[in-house]
Length: 193
Image 1 (cartoon, rainbow, N blue to C red):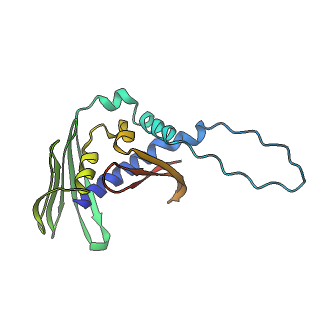
Image 2: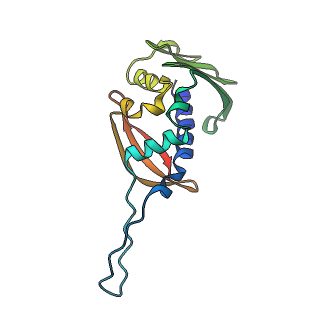
Image 3: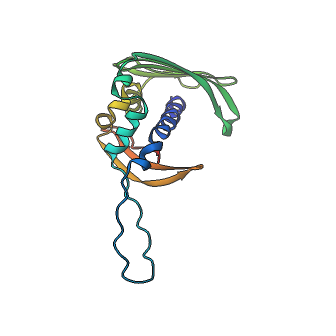
């Protein structure tokens, strides 16, 4: 469901942030032209990295292509908090290459919510809506989130990737990338500057 997808996105954003902490060091400074007057010119904003530069740093931070391709399954377990609803519980995600996933969120007082994709069909089940097949745009999102090697296939999964700028997130500066899939809604991804 949306909550488990959101949790995956949060985990992805954190990983993206860790990955690009070196990108500012990799850029070469440019020489400034001589000043024509005694009044200093306003400093030009540094050029933003390209999408390719950001994605390359992301893959490097994950250990490189060979390291990313090595595992074929993973299990992620953690806790989830929804302060607005005063809920907290557990989250478990099971993934198998190339594109199978199951996410299980257990919230005491609400119940168990699950979302799965078996490589052909997606579904969700929760105490309020029961079992239902995923349809667009949720299905497209489940397909992208279930891609085990998503970090290597970002340009295929999101045909339109645009670096929108630099923002502050907490104490850190981040590059904002708008990622638009072939179907479904555009997403914003944040990479530590």
